[in-house]
Amino acid sequence: GSDGAASAVVRRQDTLTKPQGSLGRLETIAAWLGRWQGRDMPKLDAVKVFVFAGNHGVTAQGVSAYPSEVTVQMVANFAGGGAAINQLARIAGAKLDVIPLDLEHPTGDFTQVPAMDEKAFLAAVSTGYDAVTKDLDLVCFGEMGIGNTTPAAAISTALFGGGAEKWTGRGTGVDDAGLQRKVVAIEAGLKRHADSLSDPLKIAAALGGRELAAIFGATLAARHNNVPVLLDGFVCTAAAAPLARLHPTGLAHTIAAHVSAEAGHRRLLESLGLPPLLDLGMRLGEGSGACLAINIVRSALECHAKMASFAEAGVSEK
Amino acid sequence: GSDGAASAVVRRQDTLTKPQGSLGRLETIAAWLGRWQGRDMPKLDAVKVFVFAGNHGVTAQGVSAYPSEVTVQMVANFAGGGAAINQLARIAGAKLDVIPLDLEHPTGDFTQVPAMDEKAFLAAVSTGYDAVTKDLDLVCFGEMGIGNTTPAAAISTALFGGGAEKWTGRGTGVDDAGLQRKVVAIEAGLKRHADSLSDPLKIAAALGGRELAAIFGATLAARHNNVPVLLDGFVCTAAAAPLARLHPTGLAHTIAAHVSAEAGHRRLLESLGLPPLLDLGMRLGEGSGACLAINIVRSALECHAKMASFAEAGVSEK
Image 1 (cartoon, rainbow over the protein chains, first blue to last red):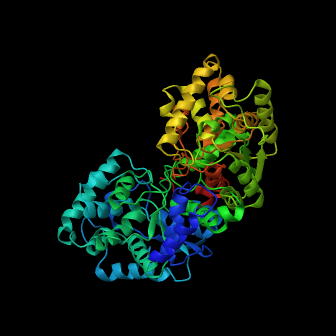
Image 2 (cartoon, rainbow over the protein chains, first blue to last red):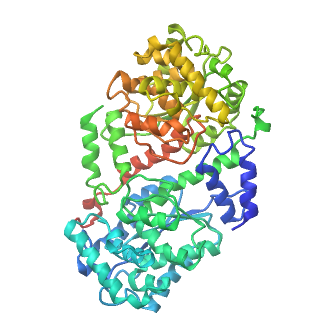
Image 3 (cartoon, chains in turn orange, red):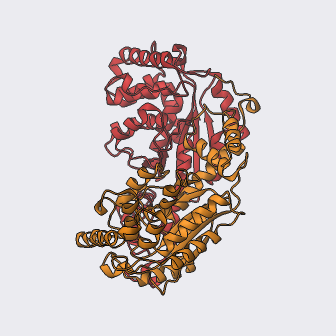
């Protein structure tokens, strides 16, 4: 990140016709854009939402309220323009790119085998990495994958401890018995892969999923390519979380766009030190919460770029 | 409000390709639009931000960090397009209407006399009332008035009790001594106008301000004309609060767009039972927080109106 660009943004903010600091997070967002784009005057011409989709072997354990074929059906719905993310991306002025990852081959059931071997994991990471190009000004990451709050909770438990119950919620809406099956599956997975739990990358491979690995790779590429990131909900945040374990500022170029209603998300954001922008009880995934925050980032930049200074407007200062 | 329209919105929401309720407040916002517009399919073609401006006699008590001439200077800045609200309204696709109220004649200093007599109060209420026409689909109310967090805190104290300190904050940025002067002025005002404190309208006249009275009138007109309202920060909310005292559902057609960093606002929203949409540490006024929430309301409607149903998209249900 560029300290110089961030400082230039703050200096300009303090000349604009408002009490200093009175735009709250809109001011810190402008500085964040400057820092991670490396531009004194940030821009938001090219904004893109990536939705990565994957299928999960752990659904064999009865962890989701919906059947696995819904993943491919929803990918078709994205292509047809009928999903929530289609509407949200359009209204946010963002391009939408849906990237299915080998849907016909679900990951391994992590209660029995690693979700991915090293080759499958790296292939998914690379797909995500290659998606985020230098020409982008801001990206949102989302996911679609029936069953994927279970790998998200498994990764969270492995990274931050406290037991599976602490991180496990109802996802798309499982009942009490389904919730219990999720906890049991995660505990079984942690036991099965106990020798992988000291390495964040091995955790992501053994307990994660292809769409989560792609988000991990895309978040890393964004850092390398000077592209600020809006993270979405629980699954997206858990997917990126190993970066924070690999480097103390590994997620500094990201903002948590929202905190979802999924039980573990608020706790995960607290563990990562990422205060969410929005808290609207959403729990859909698809990048929906991230996409909803794009307009807030645009608003922050618009104020920063186009407000008059006290001197320009002839307004008296304190 | 129309129960029928609200129910029609909920019925449609439950057919769309998402787990029921997973869009959180976006779903309840769609139903709220339906209820108060009285339309099964709400619309947001005509969205307007009103900024009412007034000057305050109580500034003689040293309650603001800025001189009173800033009110008229900022009105000129609004006209010139240089203020935060200009940028926020443009990016939200909303028209901006700035309505100065007799700026050359500040209200009376409420520590000595009523801020407004009945005639002046009703004139300001009427100006606000007449501004909100039936053709509008959504309105935001904001204000500009150096010193106006003091009348806002005075109204809040008079309506909800607990003493002036509970409701008094730093506004545009007064120091400790300034904060103490605000508390002293409010206590003096409450003592001076003790015989008005049982009537919400008399409170608004004796302790309020012209721009607050206009917001009161505009919020009432919105209810009569089927126009949903986004309330802004502390001053705007305090201006509308007497409606909640006059009728238990007097503010049901409003949403608190944000909770500001001004000390009393969170407490005031709790007292009114209005959970805010946004919590971004903003404290600028001008309708800035309300305007930032327009895109969330647009996003809610866009999802509601244009998502495919499970049947249309061929997606399996639970």
